[in-house]
Image 1 (spheres, rainbow, N blue to C red):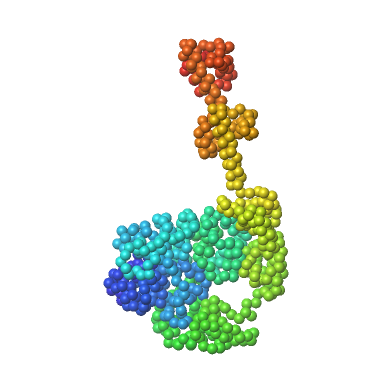
Image 2 (image 1 turned 180 degrees about the vertical axis):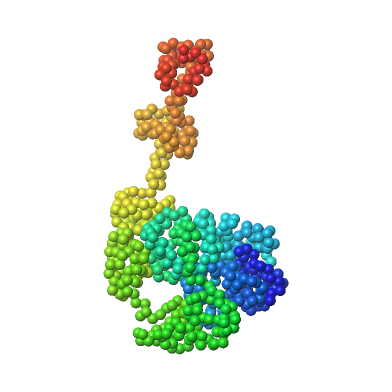
Length: 625
């Protein structure tokens, strides 16, 4: 028994807990693993993903928790197993709860890179006196801490033994995904982990298919989704290929789809409830050994790991094969999971070579057991809701398929279509259109969407400004381009007219160009009027306003003229000592009396603004009497 045992801290990873226990008991990790896990390790980085020695470790601590519950509480298995096939789950659980041998070789780790939150590191040290690794930070695809909304760091050292600050040997995680999307992904993954839901990839795929059937166009808007930068793969190909023919899908490849289809994580969790458990706990009735396994492993024939050690390797191998392949005869001995073995199939009379790993964990059999009927082919082809199977005889012969989206019918090899599901006619037309766009624009534009015909808009990318926009193909080929090109041309034209206005001011001393006046063979008066109209309507940007202000440009010429005449009237009062002026009186060579008479008339008919009225009343309170 381990002398000093402390409980795992909240959300603590198993390897972190073991590291703390080794220090608490005065041992380095290697000695601790040999003493209490019966496992030799070359370096402590091997302990990041605990396998083989877990059962021994459990027996050496005093806990009331069950073997299964403690394992799920201190690892990320409940989350990572969702993206595994049942065969992969069986292999991994065998790694943890059965001794190593040729029938139980190591598989990929759950935790490949250790990730640390710098803020949690400081907070845990303050709260618990030590920093530790959090399970939520180690989930596949998670790159931020949802508690502090900061990016995680990646631990680069191979050993945990050195008494150095972990943060000194960490590096930042590079990603092109926005912080907002990363946080949403991490929160979604964290909710799934906390739920403790158990399932497998086969069930997850079925749930996605069910959601797709509810709305055939449910994924049509994913590229306009708020978190679309998480989707760095072809969605159509994913739905038609990976979701059907590929058994294993990485978490980062399926979770964005689930986030889009099931924005409420609880809906996904509810749909997964009741599926086959990813791990089950058993107690052997013969030797009373407690161990964990999976239903798939039990179906293969894996039983109590202690009792099975009484059989040699070849006997156990033969037992598994006889359970799985009652219609086959095994020829040759077992050398390893990846060493091919000859089998004779009694049903079809053929000799076939298969890897034991493929037979045991991937359910691979003789090709004659994989005959695809028309109904099977139809279900596979039409599962995405984008295609219809029109003609099929057998997988070796071409099939005829109808594309619902574009309306084309085309012939293609069945297996090639399943591997790469796209309309062959659209592909042919797209290549033609792509080439025309490239030649027409010298590579400035590229076609990023699916070309269908001249009357259906297609997504085209402008490589200079990096923007994507939908165009009718015939409009694009006729000259329609990205708005940034149009705006650039407008800027060039504006700058040209601004330079002419500058010359006008040097020559005339002002920018008050009459509306119909031309200058330097350009309609400068109309251009000046347009700037004033744009300013009045709020359409003149700040840069252009600043440039025109440099020339003392008058945006409101009528106001400027009124203010000038009013100042002239004030000078008249100062010189004459009276506000009275006759209608025909001139001042400074201008008809000032007529102008004053016009202001009084506008006042009488209610067209003089309040500000201007007050300006006159401040000079003479009886001005309008």
